[in-house]
Length: 324
Figure 1 (cartoon, rainbow, N blue to C red):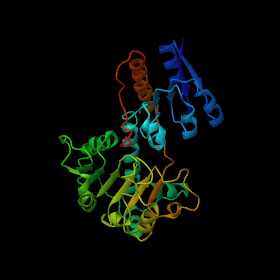
Figure 2 (figure 1 turned 60 degrees about the vertical axis):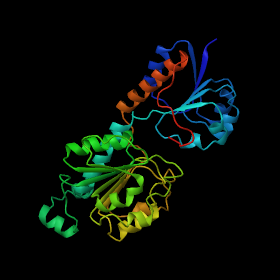
Figure 3 (figure 1 turned 90 degrees about the horizontal axis):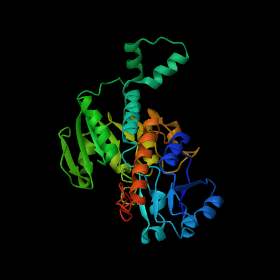
């Protein structure tokens, strides 16, 4: 009898076809509405995507859930899932290169004043660079020699740091774990040294997973430690940064700029103060989206599906207690 696999998220048709052709003995079902998911999950052994708590309680046959991204916040919030023997894996690593590119795209847009220049272009205005930068009081800068502080040195943090090395930046990082410092990293500290990183960094990259321990990690007090000339980029999970405090700091000119791709509530609420904060680039949680990501994520899933069918250990296993 074919093993039944339920897909609960939109999936690139090309990649889905690739998987179906590689595993003809697997019966694939795609259901996107909650009602249909709750019906289909009763017969599924494997799930690709997320499940609500109500759906999981009906998933009596499920043995493994492959999350379609790196974050597993929704899944680890289900207490019955945490207590069960169901394995959770993610596609950690697949998104890192694209997210790192997005991070530097928004950072350079801020440091080179590209949004303002684009507005001038729309007005068909040829600006006098020297006079214009003097007028806005926020001169464009180079990344060369700046200190990048990476909060969370997982796959995404490493990808950003590796690219920062090519810009000849000084790179410091903090993480909850201990591991050998790679050669391109100037300093690697424990998370307890976060305040030291915030005080030293000219650019801060937030790449920690969303867990109860990281919720509100960068509150108003922590943000106030950053240099007024510094830039902040958040590309991991919403809720790590206090959004109201960040908006207030930007309005008061106590930070040179920021770029956020993730938010505590998504879509971002219409009454959020972030919409009107100056020197801020907002993107709709899209930093990890690319054809490369689709292909890489599918490759991780295909390897895991092969391992599952042959009884071997899965890769990218999530520690359900830690949440990543």
